[in-house]
Amino acid sequence: MVKERGQKVIARNKKARHEYFIEDTYEAGVVLTGTEVKSLREGRASLVDGFAQVRDGEVWMHNVHIPEYNQGTWNNHAPRRLRKLLLHRSEIQKLIGKSKETGLTLIPLELYFKDGKAKVELGLARGKKDYDKRQTLLERTMKREAERDISAARRRPR
Image 1 (cartoon, rainbow, N blue to C red):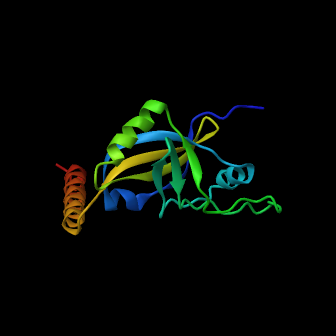
Image 2: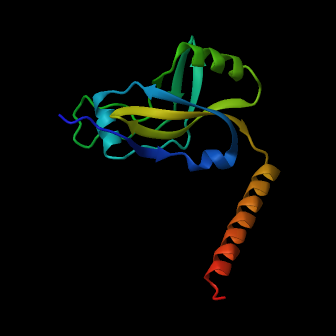
Image 3: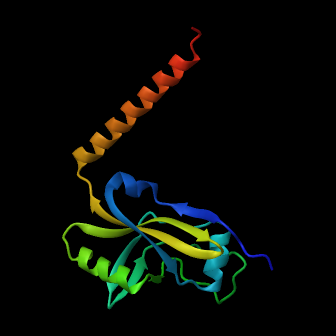
């Protein structure tokens, strides 16, 4: 059997970058059952309400929705079950220290296959206030308009 190479993105949490300031990111493996892997290979998952917690020296992912596999039998998985994340001990120790700070949470940013193994990109995030969100939108709009003006100036004949 040919080994998979590269990275195939399954799901992105687009809302996370709007709702939070991402201070640090971590790549973690995910402990999955067989039907969860098959469902992910079909490209079906949602990270919208997901978050991660450090409990008893282990990292657990909550509220990530992986729908049941269509051809699954009575042995199918629960769509929103707790899933264990695989990180190095040193990374878990850093997360324990950081998670004690107020206002910091672990948010799944992206779920993907990397060389055939399911991975999740976790972001250590601090919540944005409403005025921060408006400021971010304003900056993005100004940047888009500036790029549009530059490209229009390039297209004009001299």
